[in-house]
Image 1 (cartoon, rainbow, N blue to C red):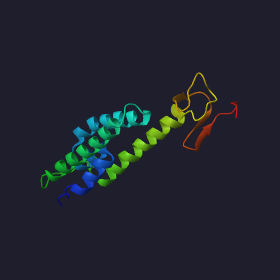
Image 2: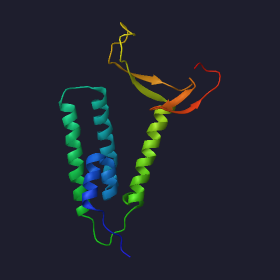
Image 3: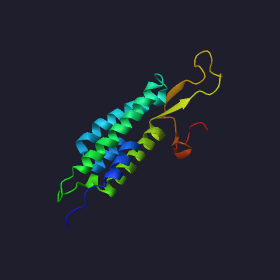
Image 4: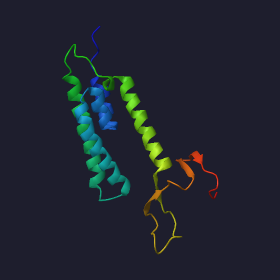
Length: 156
């Protein structure tokens, strides 16, 4: 039984939404790491609000380029060529779930970003400022409203 080639439309869609996953699915694993780095830089710049309108446009351009690249890699797939585990649906799903759990664990136990919504910390911290908070050792571990653990002896 010969393996089915990657679906070029699914590769392009994944390449647009999550560029590293699109390239993994299409079979271009060596391209996934550079796209991961570029995606993290673009998301970080958009999230931090740095720059002007050009930063989100650059992130959009990165998504379009990754979608086209994933499409081209999927189209050039040789008939009868075996597919690696990461280019199958369960591999892509596993990588996405592992990345999500790693991000949640990082935010729950190590650091988490917070935005100052009020003027209560003036003049030291301006409203709208983003703070990266160290969570390790304080006892309240959780993120996005989900409490993972709480050490006893810590304040409530």
